[in-house]
Amino acid sequence: MADVSNPKIQEAYLDVRSDKSDTNWLLLDYENDRSDTLVLTQTGSGGLNELSEILSDSRASFGYARVAFSNDKESQREKFVLVSWIGKDTKVMRKGKISVHLADVKSALRVFSIEVAARERDDLKEGPIIVRLRKAGGASYDGV
Image 1 (cartoon, rainbow, N blue to C red):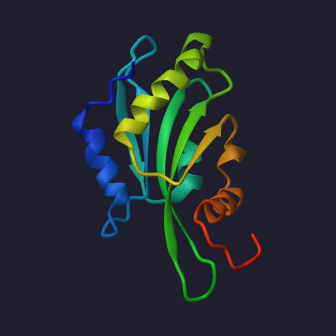
Image 2 (cartoon, helix red, strand yellow):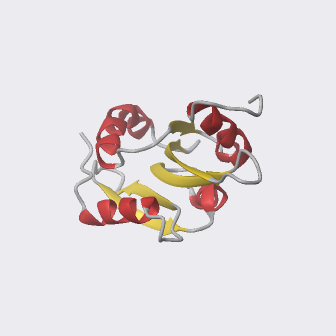
């Protein structure tokens, strides 16, 4: 079981969800290599691109991002994405615990449209994620 009880996690989650904030992502990392306690590492306003740049190949992390997109010139939508990151050099025992810890992370970061299991930075490219968000969003009138 992962410990996601740090109040800073909840504060950052609410900040990302707020329409009044520029913050559009947060990153949770393990306190240390042996710990199952997650801590807020960083937040930002540069979207999925910025989030993907700070991920470490030697760590497993969880991200949460607000993604804005439009179906046409008049409509702007925002949806939320939950990211589970496993870097290529992450230790085997940590990799094994990610799926179990994901349930605890979901209890803290409750509202999201899609999950992205990322192993490479390309997995967090905004274009394919927006396609998935459109599909998850229900009615689509642009053939996607």
